[in-house]
Length: 558
Image 1 (cartoon, one colour):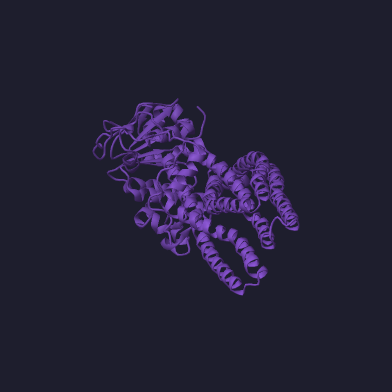
Image 2 (spheres, rainbow, N blue to C red):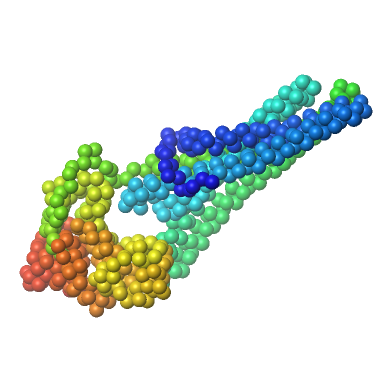
């Protein structure tokens, strides 16, 4: 049994879809090669069965030699036993190859998603990522899966062609010449199938993205009465996916029909020619039976050729999308020469806005433009390279792991993951600091309760408080909170404002907010206007000194 996920999935080859698939195969040669070997033995035994039956008829039945019949019958049984054993082993290796290839591709995908981090949403849609993970990773494994049967089909076809050429050059030439013609005929259908499958995958990705966005904003849609508009849009996109699927099915049906019609006609031709040769005395009765067996057997490798062509085509379509995604580069990269970490409680400076965050204090930032505040949070957390420094060290010159450990940003739409609450927040003190004790008490099981995906069973305010508790439990040197109380009521907000400073005593905290309750508890308030800090001081002082500030925090007009 193979343990999945793999401890070390290796590195993909992103130079082309073909090299990507070849790299997958090379990384699991220990199972691919035995699978190919058993595939050759399995199908080779099938190719030998008509020969054994034909010899039994000529040497035993025609010559009335019972010993010869017995010998060939025993050989027939032996070939059947070897075929059965090889078939079982071939299937086991094929399934293993498919599972391992899929798992490896998924690990590459997940690892790259982690590497892209916050830049993922700016470079790829949710639907595209879901489609690649759910469909394309499985599709690339098909090329590895079919390798065993394809190898067996090629070898057995060559064996049969040689036998037929030796017994009857005319029949052998029909087989040798007919199969390439058949393969080329099927290949004509593969190019449009390839294009239509790519179009279908793209449409499915767009639809998945629309569905994810709709579900994420369902409460807002209901609040503004926008459900009907999004249902209509989803229905339109669904019809586009349906049409793309019908186009794929149309080409696929022609391919499936060709897989039955063309080999069938080919078998009829070979059988008819063999019968004519037998009547003319050019071949024996045993050779005629063998030729019919060969003609019937040839259906298997011929169908395997078309199946392999179909699966490899799908794998190339999937590999092209995987390669395209895995080539995406994150907005931030590791520094070539990382500098030593600055000491704890170092000041945080943002040259773009002029903000200086003093260590060990709660600094509130007010901006009339929420986008400016969010952009500041992204810069302070080093989600883009803006020259922010921690102490005297630019964040760009620190390892990303160090930056993420030292500076934690909680944005306006934080993610709540599935799993036991205790894994995220084990200390009740942080839950109390976030005024989330009632949330925990309401859960069936308390701290041992499983939080549902995205916290969909919780209200917006409940999710916001659990996320705040999780952030406090991480105890980062610098905690940046973007509107941490936007979804809670005034009484809960007051409790959070009173407890936040105590929970973060001795550590640096930045709160981007326009809430008077939070601003009044901050050590320092910085007023951001036009992207620059234009005033600093206490909340009460700024209320008296700046009319613009007063208008923003009291929701009035300047």
